[in-house]
Length: 403
Image 1 (cartoon, rainbow, N blue to C red):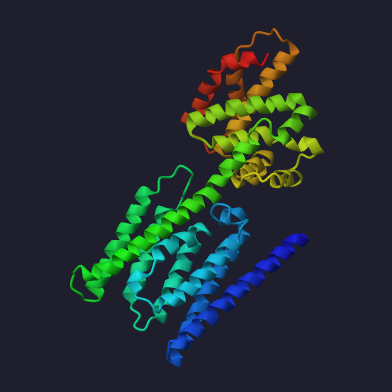
Image 2: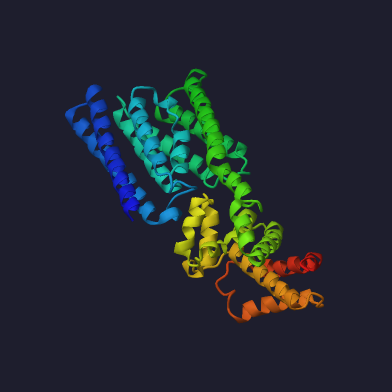
């Protein structure tokens, strides 16, 4: 609790610093560029309202926990603070350069990926507004142009994954930026379409392209793929926690190994999150090493070993079903598979030479789940449910291996 209070105090100080920095920067730039007293007052008040709104959205996102942020930004809130503060200074400087050169399209994407899409959009709109206000002859057309281009770019990069192809999203974003830049010059500034008016837009597109490619590559390596590297370590049967479980209780260890194998087969066959399923199958009973069973007692173990956020979320759901009103496909997959494995291992333990009708056993497991009402709140289709049965029934040779 004490550390949480310290973090909360640190965040308050950082957010307060952001708020003051906004007012001071906009006031100073407005004053140094010779704005009227009315314009200085307007610019300062509007910029404080903008940052205040962003801070309110950040606090609201924090109150919702990890669900309030994209990726792992909940654990790294300082990223957005640094990026927003840096972009604020750039927004002020942009008032001194031609507006056709502003790289706001890529800035919208960076702000969104370091917080969430809604905060990225609002903060991007706010920074463009500041730049327009600080221009010598600001025009509402610039605001319209960059907000629309930024919104399109944000929607293109809304759900980045390790295997996401960025070629088409980048092309669409740049094409929209190009169309809007040319339209702004021709329609809002009443200039004749010629090669000369294309020079700055072309430079703008090149700058946005360079920023996007560099940022997305870094983001992919250090944030998106980072979880994959974690999975490769902790989903290894030689990982210290699993070795410790094996030494502590071989039955639980082998049950976890067999459950993970079959659950992963189902996940790969149906397109579920195989890495998280395998992880949860391995570690949902790891608390027995310390005599712990409830979620709050077990959670520190996963955090200490730096489990990916999605893995922790699935473990939370599986260990404490009441935490989620709707049971995920991944949790159901593990539950059904573990029940089948436990049933087979129990029968073999009773009689190693027992003849087991695996199809009948699997049918009974599924019928029991239905009769107990465990499927009522599951996020699974009839087709997926039937496919689970089929995949489990195809593994007869593997079940014989359990002997």
